[in-house]
Amino acid sequence: MRGAVVLAALWAFPAFGAECSDVSYQDNSYTICEVDAETDDLRLFLNDAQGEPYGSFGNVEAENGTLVFGMNAGMYHEDRAPVGLYVENGEQAMRLVTNPGPGNFGMLPNGVFCIAEGAAFVVETLAFRDSGRECRSATQSGPMLIIDGQVHPRFIPGSDYTNIRNGVGTSADGSRVVFAISNYGVNFYDFALFFRDGLGLDNALYFDGRVSRLYAPALGRNDYGPRMGPIVGVVDHLAPAG
Image (tube, rainbow, N blue to C red; front, side, top):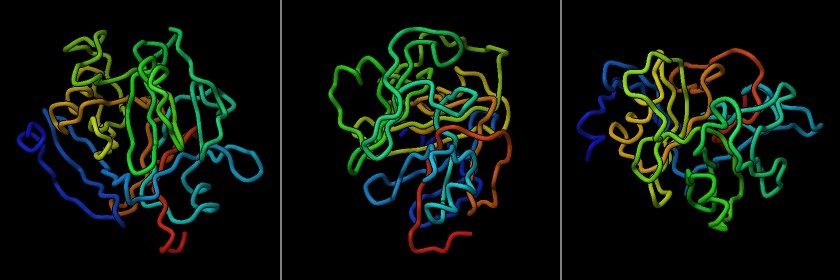
């Protein structure tokens, strides 16, 4: 396995099914959280019961129960509304966007992270549109990092355009779901290689860079910063919130 050869875990802490760890790959450091989509309560969060954006991991916990993992999950406008497709518990808040546009989101091909029953998938946008795939929840972001084992065609090896970045990758059958954030600046090309060659995943999607955030209490990590739009997380109903 490619990932088993090159990925070196520094420490790992199981967290009620979601397992987070700090790892190294090609002289960079990443934190990853691997989720079991079949057994873990993996969800997307946007607005609270009053219709206001959650904005933070703490607000998500206050209304939904203890988070064992959380991460920002897609690009958003100033009012925290999603830029592209957003579905939460079967309710669509924003349509799928298929046309090119400005910024990283519009660097086609972009893609969709789909939480289905017992599995989760990263799917390129046009393939998603044509597939008829059923998603309990979904968030669109971009660019794609890995598309069916291939690096995004517009990424440049050795680029000096680096940033803290985060995203999600899945296996082709949806059985493996791994969220990752770089702990130092990384370019798109190297971040894509981390998902493909470091983690051995077939498809991966970029979430963001400037506002990349992770909540991993098992690692003692709770990243602070500007209020977020879409958030992805795993809820543990057996543990008390706070």
